[in-house]
Length: 113
Length: 493
Image (spheres, one colour):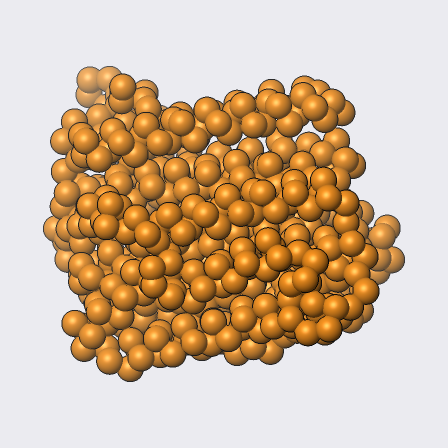
């Protein structure tokens, strides 16, 4: 299971890097989404897959899943959701204002203002 | 009062929430912000005195026993940083009245500022690595708002890059925390430190340490990772720039300090050596940038990069002198950068440009501004008895004690370049033939200059009162030097 997850995470990171390096702003944003998905899956995997019962500690339950990675993922998902939403709005606004979504054309310095 | 250390986080946070309810009433916005900030400054000043008197304050939320709940820890270093951040933000709030413009004030400018301050104070105070990630996100979200507020073309263009860089570094942060959790099984920084010294710092932990340095280095702008900083910081208006320059990179620097002193101090031959090389390269790169531009903003922005290098160089020495110097220099740099950015804001308001070639002769018409700039410039370069001197002296002393002769010499030489870069502004802007300027009304000039003068006066007092501040700084450095004090304070309960 861990091996499979590692391959999936690696693939997500790879796809994310490819998309982030592309020119279109929308692809870049999708790339950041994939990157955070990879990171979230990594947390889940790093917590370990041992344990099957829910982590409700009563007498006799010894084989329970680690609840902490799940709490961490929940927090991280909410944050990346918020950031992605903001990023999309910003991309739309800057497309309206700058009339391009091409990252190469978004270069520039003080002389180009 | 054990909850005292939460107040500097909660007060700005609540202030920001209150401000959300009446965005269009500017007078009320200003009043509430100033009231909230005054409270925050008082709370953090009390916190510093309590930490000095009673030692490290720790509170674990929800009354869980220490490694399980989320711990907030206030040791002398974080208490002083919190106090400095609050003071600077209060000054910048006053500065904003006359400079940020009504349209921004009506669109939740102060609210975003308070949210950012809550995040900064939280990141300084937290004792839990994942909680630190959350506070980083809080301050980053607020900084995204601040950097794009106004929606000028340039701001939009630069903020996209800023957001992208920070999203990538946040994803890297989560990844690193996940790996750290799988190796140590805990997220409490004191507990991680205890566990790492128990199991020994093996290869994988050193990898994690380097990843953390990369993550925080991306926020704190160390050598190969600072390229996003100059253009992004130059985009927003000056008060925002001052806030970013004084606070944001310093959060990254603080996190690196904690990483290499508290979490992973056991392999200095690799991590500290790496940090030292990066720090020296950061200083060199910053020096090149500071001399290369004729733009006021860029020159001072590159001085941020230099200062980050100097502080981290001190941290990498792993001896008391280096660490104490780093703490001294960190506080000095926050104050002086806020002062310098506020002063260039005044110059830009008067001349209407940030290009040095288009200004000159301001000395005759604005002598107060000129002399304040000169004092701030000398303070930045570290001319005794001004504020930059003592920190740098200790850092160089630490370098010589640790046999890093060349590093120390480069740091000393960089002071000259720093002096040259800011005196160049003095020569071009204040000396020479007066050029026709846009000018500004006396009210605006006073409203901008007075907060800037107050911050500059603070740095002068910081420099002159070094002897008086020394016990506090020594205390802070001692805890960095001996992580066991920090661990005992957190895990004792």
